[in-house]
Image 1 (cartoon, rainbow, N blue to C red):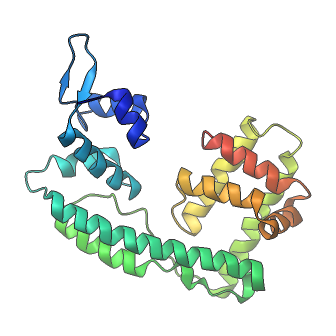
Image 2: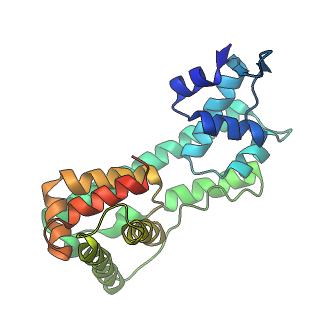
Image 3: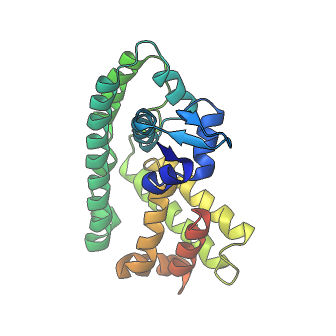
Length: 240
């Protein structure tokens, strides 16, 4: 048996989140001590692993509950499908990394936008939906067709976001204005490119500050210091 603190330590899930999972019926402890403390057994830990995999794939908590409580839920089959989707997601992220590197090396206009093609994931999610029912959990991945003119305009809009960051760099990264800009940036990436989770956004923020070429592109849009300011605002937004 493990206490809630021990489970939190080994899983990285906060104690507050574990308590919330218990409250909504997603992950209940195996038993409680006489003092009322939660205790988790191996079965509970295995269930937590499944939950974390679903969360990594952007499932909503209500969908996870519906899936895992379904009488037709097959843990092995679900795991196989999770692995397949994670592999597709990894390939998609690899393509996006190659795309970003292409921007640094040869410029936006010469880069192929096929990196944003999620058709393989879309096909898989269609089959997964048929298997798991009417869940909306996979709708995070969207595939949009654009003309070259639309792509160019999109990149101009993206640069404009950092120009707006530049106007705020004299203020605190914790200010409501700066945090609103981070939220706007995250929404823009999610709407036009790919699902930008807090984890991905955090990684982007670190890249903006650490990578000299990214820093140069961002600062050219918003002025010197914009990349560092945006990175700090993102870190605050992501709770780092």
